[in-house]
Length: 170
Image (tube, rainbow, N blue to C red; front, top):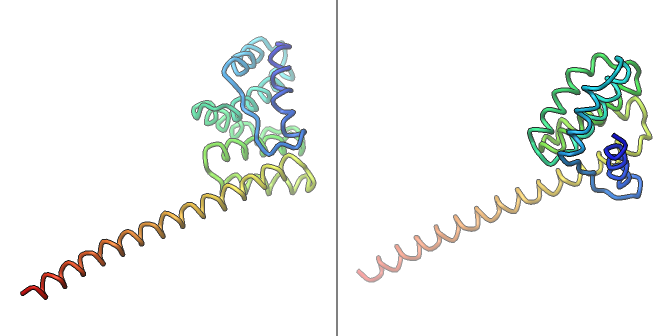
């Protein structure tokens, strides 16, 4: 278990080193936390292990893991024992939604996190990533639309030119 926690800490450290990239979690870490949940001796240990497992799942590269983590967090959100625990779950849900491409929902969850603690650095960092991703996706969308209109214009212009040159030949 200690090796899994060590990998988790190394992965989380990227946020605190000023990196804007969210950490990723691999299957062996997830498997370790699943074992930890199964071996928990009491409810408190089980809840702590479930939070670590949820963290690992929403930070996975596998969409099915991310969706599983989202489901676990949503199911447990109403059973949060403190505002801080609710804030943590909201943040992890926001990470999961970010990973699935649901930026609108991620932004909403982050706003709720920041209502609990307005200066929480992790939430502000993810909020900045969501805004950048939304802006970048919007610009890509506009470029695609502009390109499509350009192609349609070229094709229409070619058809008109061909039609007018064939009518002149007559």
